[in-house]
Structure formats: structure tokens, C-alpha cells
Image 1 (tube, rainbow, N blue to C red):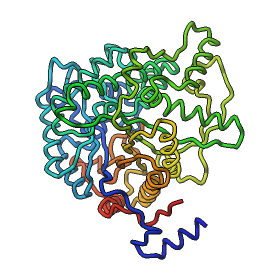
Image 2: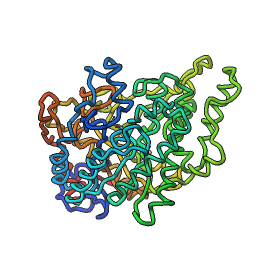
Image 3: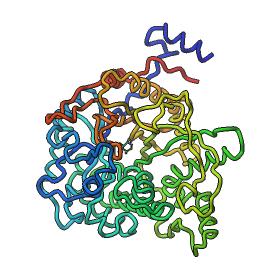
Length: 490
Ligand code: NOJ
């Protein structure tokens, strides 16, 4: 049946309703980047140092080929070119992030950098001149060092410092912004920055600090959300969300154990971030399991911090929309319990694996599994009260030198088709798709050894020459037609 559909659609002209499927006319299309990954100019003027500056300079060996973001794609000096490339793509939105220490060099609002503020105002003006709406992430992993020295994200007070910083952003840039994203992927920064330590700030306290960090970041998000609602929304009329990452999991076998492993996989990733925002608390399965393990490990209380009633009231319902960063799918199977091991991995208790038929990108984890996007969207919609969803990231990584990037085109085609199916067949409330990323950029731990960009960058040339890849033109056509040629509904 599937093959029949495919064959029919392959030979039928565009415009045949059976095969060509269109997005609603107000659907938002765009691309994303983040400040540390592209800007460079790490120590220009009075910009403060942040944890990524510090991490890559202190432990260069932690990054593939000792890469760092000192210059990156030098967006600081090439923003005009990049915004022109976005405009030529016909993109309606651009998801970008602000560098906290570029705006507030010592992290606090008592000293605001004029040069930092002017830089972002120039970007906003340029975007406005091209009719591109910014989707602005206030925090994408680059905590000022001064804040790190105060304890970073294991200090619950960080939520107040962040809220202060967010209110400075609203004051300064609110007239330009209709879509705010408070925090990018609390999960990744907390699990990798405070748990396994492979990301800045490199803290290795898995099963403890990672959960504390999640609490602080969710609280930070909620405070920033309320400040906007209470003080700025009436005049600025924008919306506030958060960008959460999640994989989708499939059971490795039909066994009950593997189905339970899937449930844990989802709850220890998506649930840890989203459950408090919708229901005011961690998922019950997470509370119970970590609580029981903690007692068996001889602790007096759970390693998972209890969310206070006051904070529940702040966190619950703190969003206008939810950003989903979806990249890939894994199989999950049950891991043998090892109570002596205090770690996020043991708490979660799953083994991840992949299908040998799934196409693999240029890293160890990214397989092209578009069906996962549709499934996770439906699952979120059913289990989290049908939130309004923006795809804040979805993207494919290949080797930096590839220009004829057929795999990326396949990935985008497959995932946008899944998105349409989720929207029209499953009735998921999704209102936009933002591809990660506009250009190749500093990919954290793997440096410049892989690239997600629609545009390739020559990182060896001082000019950082930009070359649009084949996928750039594919995506441009998709945005301009607003329709997919081959996307059967089922
Ligand atoms: C998620 C992060 O937000 C972004 O910074 C990163 O580059 C992409 N995923 C790809 O790994």
C-alpha cells in the first residue's frame, strides 16, 4: 500500500491533492543558531568571560581538534551577509540567542555593556529591514564566569540572577521581539555540564548536581516568564516559551521490560523538563525511583530535589508555547540495576541502541528517523494537554566539506512530512519549523568536525567564506511553495 502511494505520487504532477501537501499560510519557517556557536569576538570590548570561553581555554583537549568559539563563524563581523542569506531563503523567523556576558559583562544588571547592546540592536534592525522575525533565546548555555563562581546552576539563587538578566533583555530589546525562549535545553546543559561533565562547566556529579541544575533552570525560566507577563506583555505583546530537547524511544523488543524502559527513557528526558511546567512536579515514576534508590544507597533524602509549593506555583503553566528540539530516535532496553552506582544513567536504567538500517550522520548519535518526530509530537500532545508547539530545532549533521548534501535534503523532507502528518492527521498544535542550523558552527564537544548548516563555512579562511549547500536551495523552495511534493497521509 505504502509503495503504491509512493509510486503514484512519484509519477503524478505537483498539485495533485493526494500527493502534494501544504502547510497553513501562517506557518513559520526559519533557521537557528546560538551566540557562542557563531559569534566569535569572545573578548571584544568589555564582554565578560563565560563558562564556554573558560572551558575551551582551560581544557582544549576536551574538544575535537582543540576547536573553540573564539572566532567561530565570526558572525560578529559577518552578520549582514548571514541575514542576507536568511532573507534570500525567504525565512520568516530567525532563532538566535543573546550572550549574557556580552550584555552584562559581570553577569549582573549594575553594569550594562553599551557595545554589547548596540551589537544586538543592529542585528534586530537588520532583521527588521528584511522582515525577519527574531525568536530570541535568552540563555543558550553560556553562563558568565562571575555567575559560575557564585555556584552556577547548582545554586538555586541563579534563578533570580537569570530573571534579572531576562528583564534587562525585555527592557532593551522587547520592542523588537515577539517570541522569547527563556532557556535552551535545560536537559543537555544539566546532564552534560553538571553530570557527565563533557560540556562546560565540566562538573562531574551525575545523579545529584544534574537534577539540582534542572530545578534551578526550570525555576529561572518560570521567573523570567512571570516577569514578562506581569511587566512587559501589556506593552510589548510578545510570547514566552522554553526550548526542550527530546529523543523518541522505541522498545528494542516487545517485552514488558523494554516497554518500561521506553517509558523511563521519555520521562528521564522529556518528562524531567516538561512535567513540572505542565503539572508542577517531576514525573511520579522519576520521584519514586530516585527516592527508592537514594534510600537504598544510604542517603537520608532523595537526590532529586523536592519542588517546593511556592516554586510549583511559579513553574506550573509558565509558557505560551513550548519549543521542541527533536533530532533522532533510539531503541531502549532495560539495564540491569546496579544500586551501588549513583548516576543519572543508573537512575534511568536504559540501554540505548540504534537500528542498522537507520542512516547515520557525521557523529555517533544522529540517525535519520523522521517517524520519531510525528510520534513524539502526538505523545506530547496527548500527555501534556496539547500545548502550542514550535519546532525550535531539527537538523542533520554531516562532514563539514560536503556541499552536495543529499542526506540533509532527505532528512528535511522526511521530518517536515512527519510534521504535516502530526498537524493534520494527529491534530497536534504545531505552528512553525526552525531548522538547525543556518550555517556550520562550533558544535560544542565535537568542535568543527561536523556541521549542521544549510551553509558551509570555510573555517580555515580568515574571511570565513560562506557556501550555500544543496539543502539551502531545497529548503528555500520548500519555504516559498509552503508545500511538500511527496508526503502521503496515513
Ligand atoms: C542542540 C543545541 O541546542 C545546539 O546548540 C546544538 O548545536 C544542536 N543541538 C546540535 O547538536
